[in-house]
Image 1 (cartoon, rainbow, N blue to C red):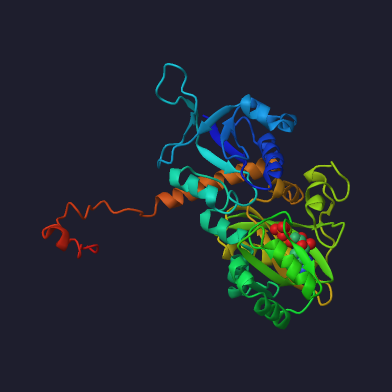
Image 2 (cartoon, rainbow, N blue to C red):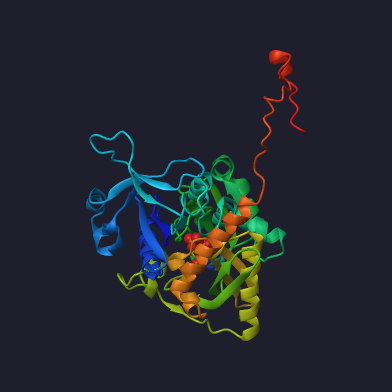
Length: 401
Ligand SMILES: Nc1ncnc2c1ncn2[C@@H]1O[C@H](COP(=O)(O)OP(=O)(O)O)[C@@H](O)[C@H]1O
Ligand SMILES: [Mg+2]
């Protein structure tokens, strides 16, 4: 029997289109002898659709038409119900027909509301095995402030930073500027805490620019981070595959930027060229680095994956300060663009094998979770504890037993 794999993509995120590309690449890579793929496209409005038209990238030029020609579907938030239901019940039927019986979910979603644990929480509620990071590691990985706090406390190097909320900024700009100048000096990089794709990020070399960049970042997020800016920067990315028990790190990639820092265009449009598509963004694989530096970065990526309790495939982006060869973890992408397949191919694991491993890891985690105890069969109400005295007695129910 084939395994029915739901590939989720799209979503209410600024990285919607990137997710469509990543997902269609992943769907093409699955071994169709072993897997039945059910594409589930989440529109920018948050509605779910399935159907064969979703498999052709050209159909996304007109998204309204695409969804009109696809089947709107949903899952119920009931533990153990892995069915995908059609929204349309048909004229004479009261029950929603089943569109597909799912076995495993593979989220190929990027950005806020989908890569930050929110969507993973839906899958956890249903209980369906799924690939990739769980709610906790997704959320910790997405928030640039929380991630840095965790890594720093575990001895993984990150650049110095100052963080604050939009409310704190608006009620005391001078104090925050003073903190930045005292702790970091200039230049600095200002970032909204939880976006991706360089959205809202700015560089500031003086006080006026700092204020302007924070005012801008504040439009995107309630939490803002200002970081020491590495001026002699070399960026390196490393993918890690597995779970906290067992994991491997990939060969390294050096993305090539066209301006001061990697922009949305660099990442997805192939630098200044316009329509080359994500897979052709300029990069050097493997990165040209001395062997000891390569080893150091691969270990750091693997440690980051473990400390954040990641799962499946993630990509850890590090920064080398070429002034003194120090290395810092910049960020983690818990669902990396193209699932980092090009780094795994260069490491001897084909895209098809990568998808195999993600499904196997999803099933392994589900088996492990099923072995843990979540509920007690005992019903404290049925035991009579605290019921005798009516409302009064309810003050001291006996939870321990
Ligand atoms: N501390 C820093 N020093 C120098 N450059 C930085 C620093 N932080 C980020 N950058 C530059 O900005 C880019 C985007 O920042 P990043 O934190 O990776 O955000 P995103 O989540 O949007 O990818 C990086 O790829 C890098 O080029
Ligand atoms: Mg980045």
